[in-house]
Image (cartoon, rainbow, N blue to C red; front, side, top):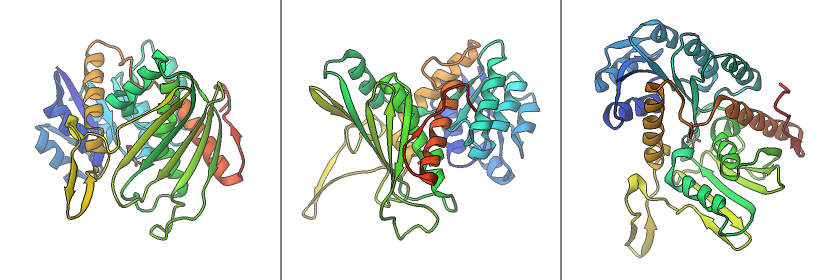
Length: 337
Ligand code: ISE
């Protein structure tokens, strides 16, 4: 049995605690940390955790946990991951590993010095049955060579107060992770563009268009809109020489067949309100693989590594540079900070 501490009792911390305590074998949530102690206590009560702490560092030092899930705000991921690594605890850090290259590179450098890997990063799309099936199509090559991909990533409402760059570092990082994973090829060059922006959001340009090129010259388009109002909508299409393959849209929620509703002279299907129901299977599989790997003293083979997540932050940074300065930006090589 793995005693898990969940750091951060916001949207994702609560959901990880729920999944770990109800749907993941061999795990028990024993402690919750959040600066909002009442919030932490409420989650602890729901999942039967005995420890409640104001900070991740206190939870890590409590002796109540064998492993931690980090779901605090993005800016705290790197410092908390470093603290967990120092305590020798297997760690699943929510994406991104860090919003800045400096912090991500620091974690990667210290992680490389450990005797065995301890940290995985929660890019859960790698566990989504749809993305897994797309990768298999490319591996098997039945549709011919990949020529281009088109992705759409839309949220109902933006987190309030975040700048335009957060659309890349917090949301589009999923595409930045999944495209090299699907194509088994690194992103080498990126371009940011936008046109008319929504009047419903003052602080961000929304939507944004990202173009990314992978090493073999394949072009990838990503349309990200974090304040799209109508539903949580994630799409991906592979354009190949002999046909195109795409994720079902809208996808089936919770493994059930999608329903098409005909009523009131309209035909329609249901969208999720956010990523939790859309990626519930992925989160469950990710946590299950992480618990089993942690019990065996290793990290799940399928999960994003610290090195891959450093690369993802480098690509995100290059896109923010393209946003600020215009034009294509080459993604710096691995050694450069
Ligand atoms: C959120 O943090 C997630 O990870 C969701 O998957 C993503 O769709 C959303 O844009 C992020 O804010």
